[in-house]
Image (cartoon, rainbow, N blue to C red; front, side):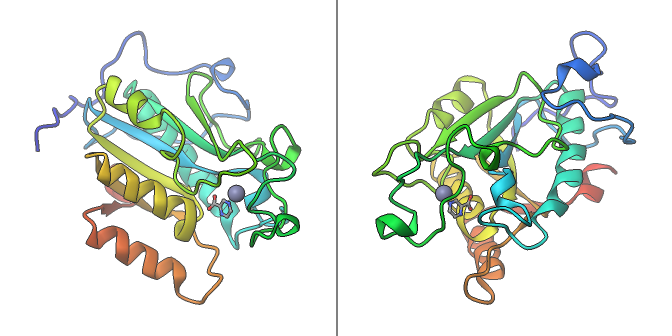
Length: 228
Ligand code: VGL
Ligand code: ZN
């Protein structure tokens, strides 16, 4: 591949180590991280819809959805240490959104803009300089893909990104559609297989979604591959 490997330890401007105030949600940053072994200059991390309403107890809680948070925190640390960009998409609906049952849609009300349910969970350590991508922000438009109706593709292209690492919620909806659009846009896609969880409205939806992403050209990694 044409991506240039970073020397190890990853170099960067300044120390590359972020202080606690550089994060939107400051919890303690005591997690251990080892050096990045296989990230490239043209890589970016995309965190898909890790929002309170998609976590257990939320309006549209994904079973075990909270389990992606500590894993994504590790991935975030790797990308920050390499000074690589982090993008976080979020569902950001009006109160009368077309996807809600009251409007004839299939979902309970969820991720209403500015509500508590639409916030990122406090323990997800999204860097303050991340690009936040809001989607499905108008009544009559739904968007499972972070690319749909947003500037995400232009942002990634103009940042020189060639390969995206994707994790978050939910495997069979927003992760699937974000990955499909990323591939269509010409990005290489690495699916973070340990940092995704599925809704599984129909049993097996999540596994079928993973299969579909692989068939379309995505590859998968998990934390232990990155932390080599
Ligand atoms: C999603 C259902 C409805 C998702 C968003 O983020 O996967 N799922 N809206
Ligand atoms: Zn939604």
